[in-house]
Length: 471
Image 1 (cartoon, one colour):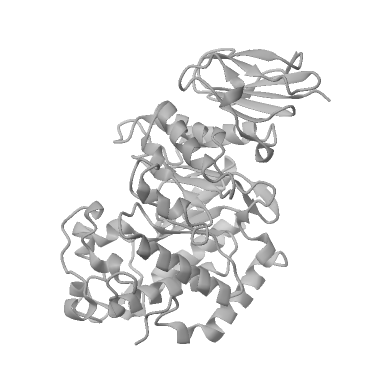
Image 2 (spheres, one colour):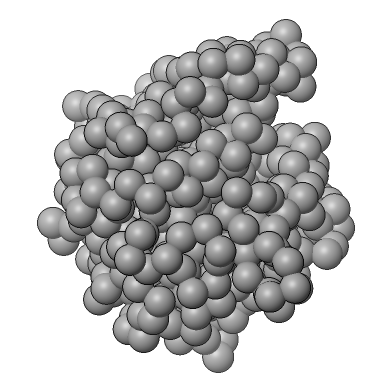
């Protein structure tokens, strides 16, 4: 068997099948077709464009593998009603009520990897159709890392002990992996030719990804992340990014891909594999930065964002940690992270599932709705992070997005007072204050342009100030 190329085994199955994907995709997406797909916004490639229009992705949901939940339509309706348009889709089967992608071989309880479980793929297909109907962007994580370790691996169909398709000796895969994924002790993630080259295991990995793409490539609202919180060799993610891109090309599509690394410090060299390789990864997910708090959280993302200035790419956070009683900070931490991501110039921000995040709770809905109000009051897509325009600022006191001379937006996590250097403005500025926690605008105020303006929050809690030239 020839598995040395990135197409590998299964290449013979592409041909007419991929042409069918392309034709089905054109029918499903209408005349906009490929031009309307999710892609970097040409006028500011730090942001996304969908259906030909710039779009800021905001979201939250009750679960990560949303296609497996029983009340999917209700969840998506709730998200859309508050202005949300972004969900995470881990291809995971580890929770109660989930199903696996493979069918059982018979009475013995083992799986046949050459046969699909129709229910799994029906759920996935329905999920893609319902999100497309609501213009909700889906960020898929192809490999659910935690499904391949410890107790989940012990019942995973891809474990040689659980299927009739291959043995441990034939596949090179272990039957027991009792360590945390950070130890990377499952050779499942070294199957690619550039690593250990395990052709039997790779064949069925390719088969799974091809099946996934047979559904997802019919749509233009899908982003692709190779893994969830991985620590494995960069060769693994690089292989799958090339594989997915090549399959998409054969189907007449272009897709956007990234990788998600485990390290909380996004300045760690582990993340370089994504930041340094735009030819492999067309956007960068920095969700793990959301383990950090306050000024450190913001400074880390800005340090990395500056490295992309010459070749901008969207930065996304498909999971924002922080919930009362959770392990990664409280609800206030999670909400501040959400707003700092937006005012830090990120393209996408989504609250992580409960209890590690606030999901799509009432509080999350309120924050998404408020973020839509605030970012709808100025042209966020022409602005950039400009904390250098703020004076008298304490750590984590205020954050600025601006198009100097035209418009300014300042976020206050709590009551505060700073000065804003607006000397580039030629004319009178109008100021609008938005009370984030209550979702209310205050009447517009006028201020002379030029020089430094004092901005003092009208009260306690979170506030946003929007400043723009009077007409």
